[in-house]
Image (cartoon, rainbow, N blue to C red; front, side, top):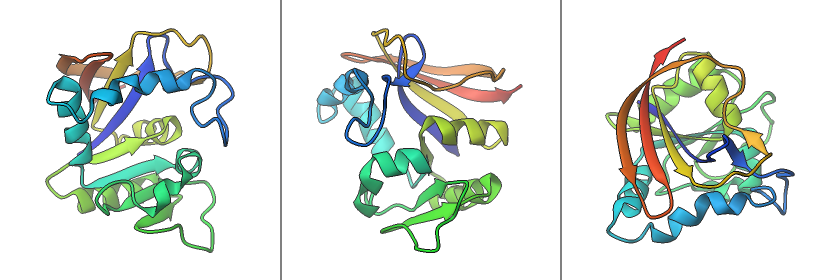
Length: 183
């Protein structure tokens, strides 16, 4: 199973404006992750965080991977990291990461690595590519009560039917899970 995990503002942004190196989440975008302050707790936010950290593989877009400092080669527990990119470099990425320019091959390898578990998706570009290719199974949106007004949108121009699976109220986010039904 491939599941997107993404914090998002109420107006649909996953970063604030001007996201770049040194300001990875854009202006004001750090607000989207305040709910993670409770991640080590025993409440809903801790449960959601623990579920995300139990995933068996990671898929991310190249931009997300680079802005995150390549996670120093290890997102969590050494799971394989599949990086979607338009251009595969000759030099391999660090740690367990591997570049892919084929969405289907990336998804297949992430599914295989995750086994019966979940492959976690990070990044708007990766999510859009997987959704367009019919490879995204579920969305888990951590909806944060803030309007950023600008930034990077999670989805833009796609029509997709979703089935609600779960809604949990955390300390500073509503955690929503949906099954992707198709367009």
